Length: 301
Image (cartoon, rainbow, N blue to C red; front, side, top):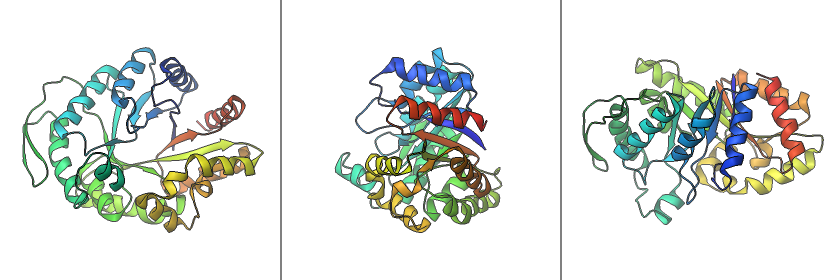
């Protein structure tokens, strides 16, 4: 299992610190550095393009860019530009977002999310390969071809339920997960996406998984912090379903917390479950906690 860092500075408010954090991850030998696309904040692919100019020797990725507000031709243009600016060190992580955002903030219909995803990928994937697209769906229409000379980025589709996992296995290079426990990954995610990929004649998908982590001796404080920091994810239906499937009360129970030995056991569980890449979200609020956590993660490389 490769280990990457899930950036704490994706909002773009402190660009110098973002660059320094990514550089530290690269110098320590981490495989990847991930930026989330936060609603109403800085555009993740643009930030990656800037950071990559100063930080070599690490792969960058998005986790995840929502599809609804970006036409697939625009998404493809942005992704290929990010690939160009990173020298091919870019992975495009995309997802649907959530009904409350799609309808409440963007004004799009959430009536047929699976159809939207299928039609979106019908247009996006050929565009990324440089092919001419003539997609005529009920929700997505795309006609044209890109002229950007850059490596085609791998595409990870954020998929939790069975229909989305099957779609990711059939069309994409894998999935990127959040709020999904090791048991669920082992018994639900991996077999579902792998079976779909095999049936479609595609390579075994990548299973990237984001997890909050804090290496500490003060477990009670860490869990209380996780409960507050990640509270929203226990309320969003798609993540709530994954927590329920795992038998967890909330995000605090999913977070990897404890001393080095305890956290090592949790990482071993992820390896056994089939995770190919961990995106570690270091959520300690102090420099000491972050430093200890990153040192632990680096020791696992």
